[in-house]
Amino acid sequence: APGSANTCGWFDPHDPNIVYFASTLTAPSTTPTGGYDRETGKYVWAKPADMRIFRCDLRQPAGSPWSLELIAGDRNAYQAEGALSPDGRHLVYCSLETGEGDLYVKDLQTGRTVCLVQQPGYDGGPFFSPEGRRICYRSDRSGNSLLQIFVSDLKFDESGSIIGIEREHQLTDNAHVNFGPYWHCGGRHLIYATTEMGFRNFEVFVIDADPGDLPGSAGSLKYGTRKRRVTVADRADVLPTLSHDGKRMIWTCQRGEDGRSQLWVADFVIE
Image 1 (cartoon, rainbow, N blue to C red):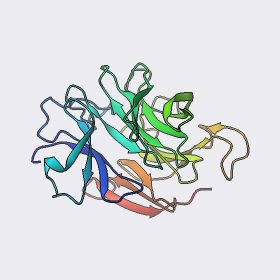
Image 2: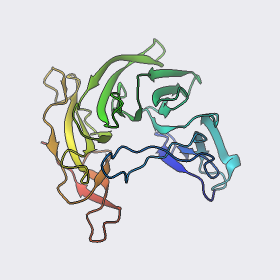
Image 3: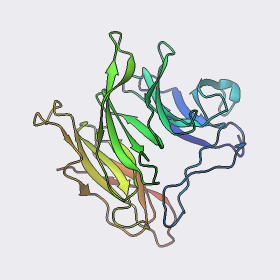
């Protein structure tokens, strides 16, 4: 709808006609707040209270509110940044219902919702690992407007429903904004954007996130090791994601002469 805020779209892995996304449906009723670029103040991630998560059947009339099914949210607190598990059973997302950004997971088979991460500060931007046993996310755990990268091992019950986390791993711990982690298809690495090269110049890095029991693993945990720079350019390189086979990276970049944000694609090779 005109003036509405929309974000975080995701295709159902089993039905290409079903899409999940977050929306206010109408113009946001609250003033957007947020932002994690302390020196320039240019980047703001809006968190309107009436942002909710919907499911859309693309076979219904496009853009019609009656084709949307409410999955999470009640217009009292921001709920967005959702992602689906590889089997399509679980939806993980960020909620501000406690006043801080916490991570929740909803079992789409049973309708049960569980809080996974409820720590001081904002935790958001979660994604399931390719094997579906872990999630990655960004966290302002220290409350200093610097985001760090985390991975958590998920806990399941006998029916296969996620009921919590077993262990949390912190991959970065520095004086920078580390933003938008995303999994490589092998499940042993993450890519993310960081201000490590300067607050006015986000760059994409890759880092180990290896549980030790995946193909190619050496049998030991490797979280936060072998950090390598991927992009080299002036201005911001942010929001990287990878193709399903891990061979292509797409990201938002400002390296053009006019400094505008554009989408770039490149071959991705990991050593």
